[in-house]
Length: 199
Ligand SMILES: [Zn+2]
Image (cartoon, rainbow, N blue to C red; front, side, top):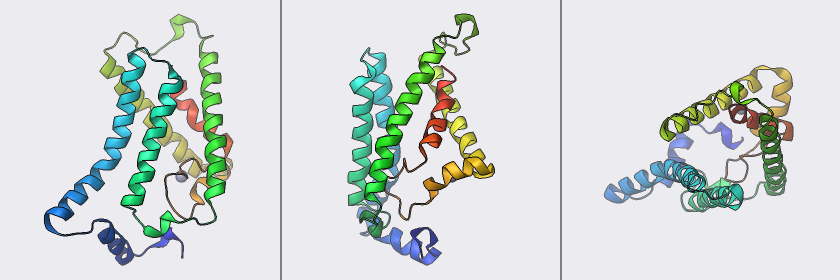
């Protein structure tokens, strides 16, 4: 049985272990557990936007803040694992390190390449509303980013050749901080395009 095939009872037992303690301690635990993701993800995104608008360069600000966010997830996982078994190596750590290194490089290079292609687009053809207030530009970017991600993901489950590229992403036997980039490098490149097309 893989960790994806927990019964409802097993899931409840695992979650009781995560939210240990009783009364106020359990409530605090549950709040911290629930807020961890929005705080880490939202906090690092806001920090990146703030630093870039303060005039700091992409390197090393964005990689450093992103790395800090990912390491925060790794530390939180050790303190409050969803499943304790997911903290131990399943013979997958080296594969996941290789996927992470290769795919982050692919994503970075693809983003740079698409941005350079974008430089050739005449100004009158550029659609992004740079005159809008910053907050509404950020909302638009978030909406396009998320819808693009959703569309590529839906298609990856529906179209056979895309599924072949996407299947490694669902081959993991545990979920942990290092295997978010377990995917075929071509699929990693596809996941970049949706937000660069807008810029
Ligand atoms: Zn999927």
